[in-house]
Image (spheres, rainbow, N blue to C red):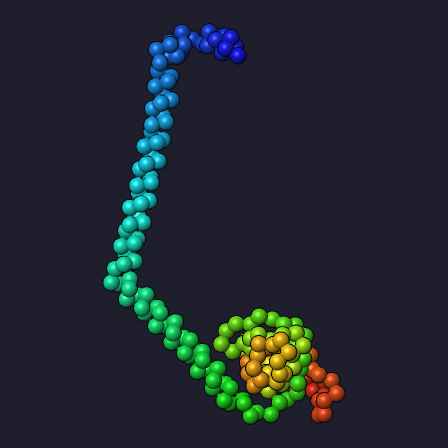
Length: 181
C-alpha cells in the first residue's frame, strides 16, 4: 500500500510533491477541520440565541394577552356549540319520528351537529331527512338503551343517510316514499 502511494506521488510534478514534504497538506486538512468546527459552534450559538428570543417573546405581555384572547375565543366556541346543540335538542325532543333506522356503518363524527359515539346496530329515530351539507344527512334521535353504546337516549344529531338502513316491518313505513320527494 505504501509503495503504491509513493509511486503515485512520484508521478506527480515536483511542485505538488513538495507540498506533501513541507506539511502544507496537513495544515490544509487541519484548517478545514477547524473551520468546520468553528462553523458548527457558530450555528449552535445562533440556534440558542433564537430559542432565547422566542422564549422571551412567549413570556412577554402581548403574548400572554394573545393566549388569553385565543383561550376565551375557544371557550366561547365551545359555549356556542353547546347552545346550538341544546336548542336543537329542545326543538326536536318531542318531534314525531318519520321512521326508524338501524346504523349499518359506524362513523366517527365530529362537529357541533354530528351524532357522535354511534355504534353498529344502534336504532335511531329519523326526525328529518335531507339536512346538513349537500342534504346528505338525516336528523336522528337515539332511542336504544345501553348495550355498549356511549349515547344517551334522546340524544339528537346529524348522521349520514347512506350509513342508515330503514327498519322493516314498521307500520306506515313505505320504502318507496323516498323516490317521490
